[in-house]
Image: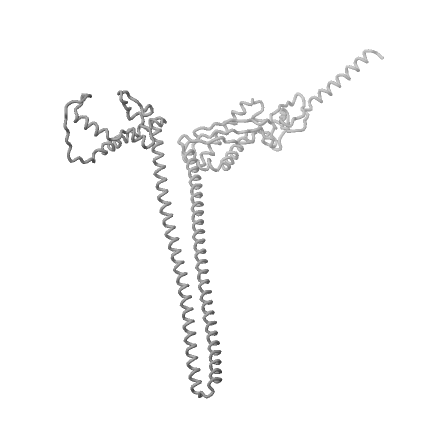
Length: 464
């Protein structure tokens, strides 16, 4: 075969294969995170108008060379920071609403066409600025239709209104709203902060009121329980005492009846015995004499039985009265003891409160002295120094001396007269202040001075 023909055949095959490969390269697959927009000669709509583009999300599409081309729209979410300031609410109060919106290109049929017509070829920053302008306008519009209380407390309603308005406008440029996050809401007048403080104060007051009511209910319940316990115990004691008294009365009545029956039996037996003895000894007694004797014996027996029964009844009555008097004295003594205990407890509480106040006062003095106990003690002693000196002066103030006779023989060996020595000795009879402290088991603080020994040298209480 001619080599030229072979070369031509190979060239044709190569051209065909290249053409086929080129045709295959025009079959474009759309990734799941993108929208492929085919533009150029696309065809016509149902109403006869020319289509500007065709959007494909997922799958693949053959793109005709020369008459068609393609591009991609990224579906990656776009985060937009919207710091809205001085937005006017329905109450004419300006508030700041910092928020973050997350938007993305919509895959809804028809909305994708809007994105292809208005966002294709724009940079990410340009899309963000365009979206931010729309969000700003709609956010101001929603805030203008709501009160601050609704915006601050009913966040769901506020976010639903924002989402509805913003998404409606974003669809016009092919975007959809993914998420809205309002970080904080504030106003320059402090109205929202005041609402928060009012709600917190109300919650705290309600909690305190609930705690106080529960404490009150507990105290009332405890007092009622103690009162009921005391009433039940008193009723039980009263019933028990009444039962004991009734039992004792029944015993006394039973014993009286028994003694009465015994007396009657004894009377009958005695009568029969007397009759038999009378009949045996004096058969000659007339029937009238026997009857008279029997009547006398009967009256005597009856009288003796009555005396015995009255004595037993009196004895039981005295016993019952003694027991009742003892119970009354016991209750009276118990009431007096309770009153004395309550009085002593109140006095103890008063003494305890006085000691607490004195301790608190001394603590304040120590605090005023810079925390130095020695300095605090000096302050206390300085405050009471006038009273201490008055006590020493009063030691000789009350001495009554009717007459003092002094023979002054001139100056002594120490250069003092007898009169001076007498007055000096009388003043020295007053116990020194350091000795008064020593007798009480205390040591005179150095702030009150030092004592001179016989040589005239100053010494402290410790050196002595």
